[in-house]
Image (tube, rainbow, N blue to C red):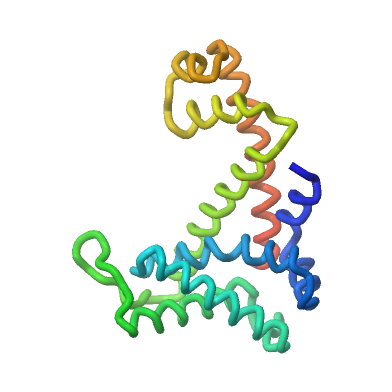
Length: 204
């Protein structure tokens, strides 16, 4: 993994927004898209949309956000960026729901609307944390300084609950080596999650 990948991934919201003013800065647009797309799509799914429709909401919401931002419509003194994007995402989701694109949620109900802003914010934060963990794992897998077997051992033991001895057999490692791998990767993953969270929380 190139150091530039981590720098871009953990760049604070303010620095991303400053760079986003340049319509030709494709790497920064890719970072904004990568940061917010999974969160918006996750929110839309939680509000009752199918996967493909949730992805469409994310595309529409991000396009509207960038267009409005470059038109100077975002005023930081009037609210947080995340609240603005959340509002765009919510309205885009409701518009799609009103057009009849929704799915039945567990229990046979259809969530057409979230009752209050706090509930929306809670969902947003949950999806943000999920996206951060997913991104941190991706960066970890791409880190050339960490052996592939080390990451595999961590995923087997820490994420899938596979016993260390069994994980060792799959990764051609001893049980002790698996525990060392788990400890090393856990430490690195925690550091990445903290960096990515700080980049988000500047705006939260």
